[in-house]
Length: 173
Ligand SMILES: [Cu+2]
Image (cartoon, rainbow, N blue to C red):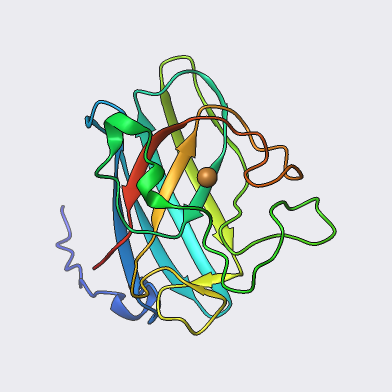
């Protein structure tokens, strides 16, 4: 004898809310202008959570920073149009620098031998609305810029990280 069962379905929408802060997106291109990754930026109560995936860079440790101009248009000329680091209070560069870090400083990440990386970072010196530290969506915007080498978190101005190999403009959602 079989018993019929009725399953009640209900949603847990209140558990699925991902916070109330502003969010932004980024699409990375390389020096050829080819898309090599994408990411999201979510503002929390004390900073921004940066999440991105990369596919198509050389293996190894890479520096990534928040640069102070929201453009990646000069990809074939090394992404210099993205300026220096986001740094509204004129701090020195580097997590290990006694006069640092600047608002655009971020940890290094590792690109696997297949060219991919999946990364999450948190920055307590930046925001998407100017309420905390440097404003990633201010007048000039910002870009996330990946360098060919890791950051030594000490040397000026960019920790010896070398050429700029990928760039993504931070765009409000
Ligand atoms: Cu940089």
